[in-house]
Image (cartoon, rainbow, N blue to C red; front, top):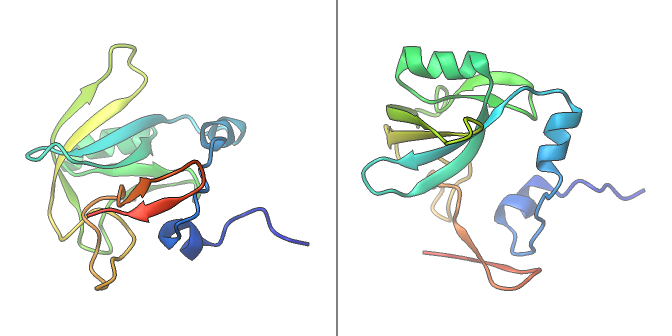
Length: 142
């Protein structure tokens, strides 16, 4: 029987679009009590990635002055970059008008912020490294 889960390498490095339109639904069905967090490089304005924070991760972020998130796939709090060295120092935290999402303005302490590596095996600066070229295809950007 074929698996409906895409191969991680194909998902992260492929050029076939495989958007997960049910991500928020899965989070809700699994009972995670989280807010979406946009992580943005404070100086350049580059959006690095979108993560999630539960109450514990949010409080740890404020205490440590470094991005701490909640992994909905691993069901655990994680300090971004604690093992890779690519931590994200907190500049400030902003909340949207409806208080249902957060913006962490950060500065990269390492070479990047994405868990994937580029063609030179270096950490990518952010997670938005591909461009949608059609409803089903992606291409790598600059």
